[in-house]
Image 1 (cartoon, rainbow, N blue to C red):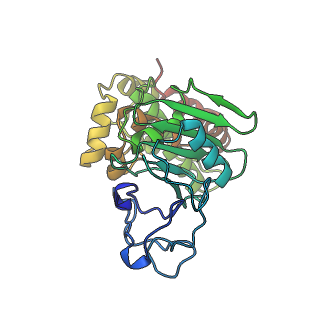
Image 2 (image 1 turned 30 degrees about the vertical axis):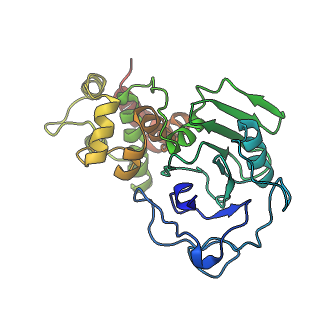
Length: 304
């Protein structure tokens, strides 16, 4: 089996099975526009080549036959936690990915059908990181090392989105409306403008209004009119994602290649996760804009 069918996306790997000599190894490259070129494999001097057979075997001895069954999700989660890296599994191999420095493993990566299940660590880069594991049937678990418990009811766990998308599985819909994202994008832009303004001279309302992603060109309008216009935009997550892919909508925080990799639900949740927390931004803006300036911005936010 070609390892290129196991892992696509430019991550380097350490495999628990003896590998072929480097002259017959497989080159990996990143896809989906995330990065280009070859990666240097840890422990070698050749960029892009797989490690030599000196890589130690994991969870089986040299004379143990290659497993013929796909490991359980609990086994994959244990391996990912023990070695602090992501794991992919086929019928015959468990492959450890050299992605310990990645805060979002599997983001933008799509595995071929040979990969039957994956596991990834989410959270701090230490022993406290939660591990999620999912297979192609959609079954998923989450392992919390701080409590040593495995949870199987993880349907609403946002951290599961990248693992599902890397197998081509759909994710649950996002219940938050598009106008809520427009609010956050606007507040983030207002915060940047307020930080760039001279101390004690916050931006005027007209300038702040123009920063709104859904503001229409024309004469100045009141905050209440802006909020009404934003609230009644007919845009859906499907339209927003399609526009982000095609480049006709440019105000979302997701690049076109990654928007194409996500489905609607995971795209929406990743948009929200890419922006600062609302409470933190609100506190900063209240201080930077003053009470009157913050009240105008607050009145311009769309509400249910």
